[in-house]
Each structure stands twice: as C-alpha cells, then as structure tokens.
Length: 278
Image 1 (tube, helix red, strand yellow):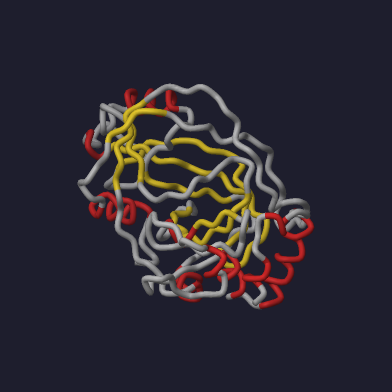
Image 2: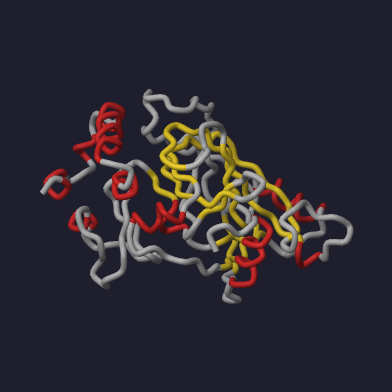
C-alpha cells in the first residue's frame, strides 16, 4: 500500500469510507494567514500562532471516515513514510478531483466521482526523510470545516460535484492552521503531492512534542503519565513527535529540543517536566 499512486489511494480511501455520516450546521474559526520561512532554518519556528475570528457562512457538513493502517510504534511509521519533515503551513486551497483518476474532472467524469480536496502548502523547516527540501503540498480528501466556506460551496456547485447538499469532511483529521508548524510523516505520490498516512499518527502539532497521539478520538485521562509510555491503558500504541524524531537519532532530537526551548521560553508552564524526564 506504501507506493500506491495518488489516484489509486484516493479511490481506496473513498471505497473504504464508512456510510455512517453525521449532518451538522455551524462554523468554526478560520486559520490565520502567515508568510513562509525557508528550509532548514533555526529561527523561531516552533511557536504556535493564534487563529483569527471571522464570521463565515453556514453549511451542511457530511462526515466520512476512512480506514487506514495503524502503526505499532514510531519506527514502523517512519519506515512506511516516504517523507518525514517539520514544516510550516503557508497556505490552504481547494481542488476538485476525479476520484477514479486523481486528476481534475473532465466532462466524462461522473458527478458522484467529483469530490473536493483540501491542499496544504508546507514550507520545509527540517527534513528528516525523503526529498522535501523545498515547498511541499499535502492533499487531504474532503473539504475544510469553517474555512472559506463560500468558496468551497461555489466550487462544488460550479463543478456539479458530489454532494449537492453540503461539504464532505473526513473524520479524525487534526486541525492544521496557516502559520503554524507541524511534524508530518507522509506518503509521496508519483506526481509529487503528499498524502497523509493514518491521521492520528502522521500529523503532530509541536506545541507539546511529548504529547502522545492515541488511535481514535478519545483522550488520555492523564496525558503526562504517558509521556514515556508506548501504549495506553487499553494496550493500543501511542506515539509522540519526540518518538518520531528520535528514530533519526538522539542528536536530531537534541537539536530539535534545544531550539524548541529557545522558541518557547515559558514551556515549563504547560509541560509537566517531572513526567518527561523521569
């Protein structure tokens, strides 16, 4: 499954998507725009930015859930990923694709196969694996809740796309904001664009690099208790950004951690250091 083409992988995601859908109306805050940093810099790259609060249109959101392969540990994740990088999100756009070809729809594309996708522009800060020294694009199936809703609805209407009563949203995709920096472990397609692996394990907000990601929407009751653990209370694997970076050697982690502390001088106020270094 690792080396699937973009078209085939997108089709599989659609086929595996469950038919259990929730319909809701409402809005959330829009990500904040910010300029990009160059690759391999060590400036203040790990500091989170706040989202702006803007009024947006309401829409019906049709939630779908895709099946992914999960990973038992960070080593397995890194081995399966084509690209592992720290990158700053510099832009978000939308693209309509044919689910059967992975290409822009043509007049031959059936309406049910015309689906909106979200594209994230990523400026590489540190590259750990793969050819990601320059700008990278991450494509995620479905639209984005609460961000440029009118644009998404207009695109769906103009393309005569599916569905005609709302915006498809893929479940369990972590929030990704313009101007913020993340650790990504991704699959790279033949045409260069990247796709996420299992969302719970392939996208990490760096506000807390020790935070363990669980498989599913539940949260750990005492997160700091698990900073040095490999499984949760149910025996399921849990992985942090630290775990992923350490796969590439202690010196890579030490470099990251030194810079991260400089960029976050008050980090002790939100991290429980006794659990981290015990």
